[in-house]
Amino acid sequence: MDALTALEVKIRPDRERPEVSRFLHIFHQLQNALQEIDHAYLMRGSRPVWRFGLFDTDSQGVIVVRITASGIAAGRPRQDLLFPVRALVDGVEQLREAPRVPNYYFEQTVNRIADVGQPRQGVQAVSVALVNGKPGSHVALSEPVRDNARKAVQPKTHAYGSVRGTLDLMNARAARRRHVIEVGITEARTRHIIKGIVSEEMAEEVQGLWRSRVMVGGVITRNEQGQALRIDVREIEALPPAGAPLPAPEKLLGADPDWIGGRDVDEFLAEARRG
Image 1 (tube, rainbow, N blue to C red):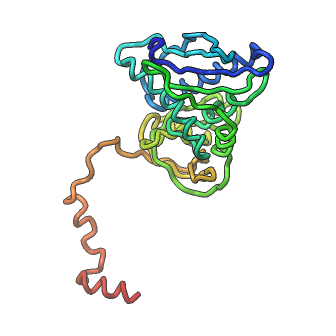
Image 2 (image 1 turned 180 degrees about the vertical axis):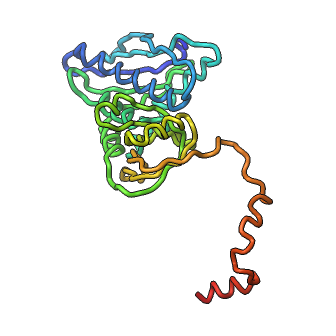
Image 3 (image 1 turned 120 degrees about the vertical axis):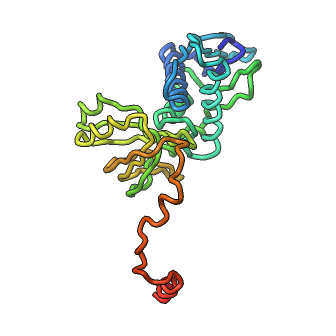
């Protein structure tokens, strides 16, 4: 990826220029956000190295910086590496409209966006745009974005349920600290990552299902939009791989030939309707 394909960041200074620590923190958070989105997009594969590209200042004193990707390995075309940038900018636009965790975002990715947009230490405002040949429209990490980001990861309900997805992102350090394992369950449709908290007793079972499709049951924490944020895992079941053929009808037909006790089907249904 070169300067024609990048994430463009505009930083509007306050009356004072941005503090060095704040300036570096903004780009550290954005780098981590891009890495998290790239992992949600492609669980396996080479990762780009994000580097500073263009540095400039416009006529109003706004600092303009582009982040580009390097270290491109075989099997990942340049346009493929643009995906994390597009998803990051799209996610900010989604957060401007509603307090929902955007597609391909981790919970911590949402927190990073809220943090980057916070005015402080000489920074008045931050905006981001996709550069694909030329810069697209900038999206400000404005107060509505920050408010919705905070609401999107705020727990609202707790109830038993289940989620389906691919098991990934085991955190062994969490097991040592709190006697649990942290995992991620990535939903296939939205690529939304749900944090799973697993007890040490289930560690071996979970490790055997790493990067497999699973159905996980437990107490689910949801936000006000009903999105699952995390699940306290009580049970886990392996699912067939995506695209696996369904059982043939003849294998299901007649599985329990005497399930209505030898009665005629019409007679059974009539009795069932009478209660």
